[in-house]
Length: 101
Image (cartoon, rainbow, N blue to C red; front, side, top):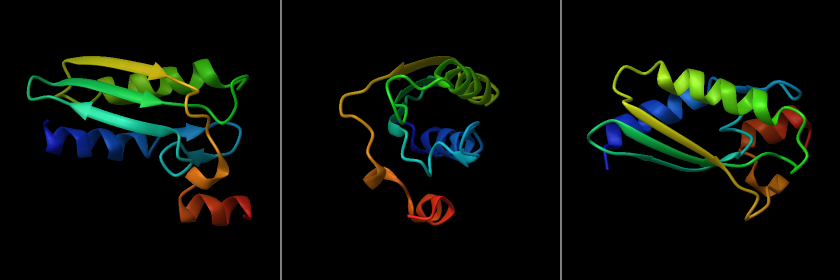
């Protein structure tokens, strides 16, 4: 595991917003797992707030564009899963505040 690259990826993901909510996908709890190896291969396991999320393709495209812009990234795989399903308990405190929860 390349912890420095993993942290860089997580920081970059925090700049990707859900277009409907205007809150970053890390604060929303949409990122389940980030793996990065020493060769620069990055794997992201993420979800959406609902299986029918109309912004699914836009969010994934934003994730891919953002992570591919990191010079150390040589390969990227983004997988969207709904198991487990996203729940509001995954919200970070700042997202809870912004959503009034």
